[in-house]
Length: 314
Image (cartoon, rainbow, N blue to C red; front, side):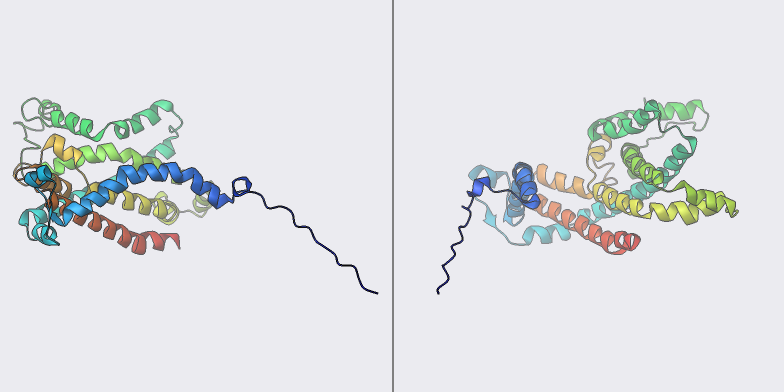
């Protein structure tokens, strides 16, 4: 006796536009507009700058639209320019001073705010965030007035306090100009680090301090063995971000010193700007110098990630 065949009916497949999307696919679709905007705003200029960096581009070539390919000539000319290395040295000094000062001050101020218990005050939050909300070029203009040799408010305060007998040309002296520019930059970017460090302090369990106090640990030992290790990860993040931004400083230089006096405040970003937009307007060489700066920042970030951030996260 034969067994009747059993037929299994398959459910009809849904059209592709009615199928349920996975979480990853849905996230990608939602980010497509952002990716397109970033591609247009950032991607195209970067690709075009890379194209210019390997061509001979001046005002004459821009008018004709014909760019002669010269390979790595622009890059070699930048690396052979003594002014580029002066700018790079100034950039290194600027970065070390600003980033180091910012981390130390951020930890000290965040600890003070945390101990004083005044962080909940809206006025305190506003005062801390105020410098970070000021546009960089406006910040530079404000401090250029403060540094003014004849009418500067800083010289007036020091003279009234009896600390100086004659006005000091803060931004016009080659020995002080670079360090004078670091102060406005630190003042503007410090709130960012304070907020991050304070948020990290809020995440440290209070029981650790109470147990350490019971064991007789001093305030310094509590800071060294509890607070500082707990802040290592956030300090590493601040170090990476602030180094990248300090290496590309431009607005304060433009507003306060414009690279002067002489080459005392020439930094890498200012070098790229002057090579590009000052006669003879070498756009190819300017693009090459900008890409060299980008590669240096990327290399520094990789070193930080390899030897600092990974170590404190293990």
